[in-house]
Length: 120
Image (cartoon, rainbow, N blue to C red; front, side, top):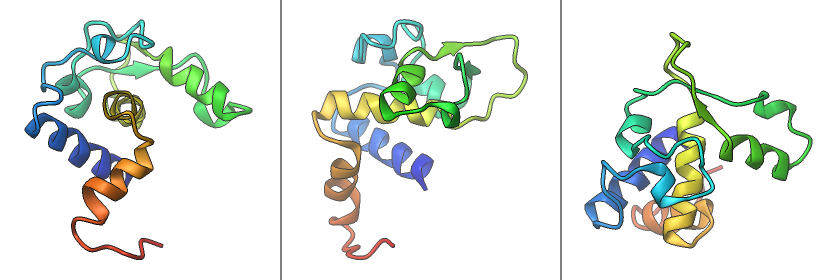
């Protein structure tokens, strides 16, 4: 569900002209130093293969996992383009541009609007 909610939220932000489909990740959040030329569209459409220095599930803390995501790199040697990494990066970008935690923004922008009270 995370990829679907991320896509919906990003498309809402585009509709509200808070970001553009061609916005570069590195411009929206300077912490993504290796994604300076990668766009929202690149991540939504899985056009850029991504890699981290280690697997996220190997991270020992939230901070370690966030570090891995913020240091994600394009890896054009990969042939497998479909990955969760783009959605993870977009989640952080959404938090940066909305100044809200992702789950809070999902609740405000999607769940409350459609009347979902129990998502368990």
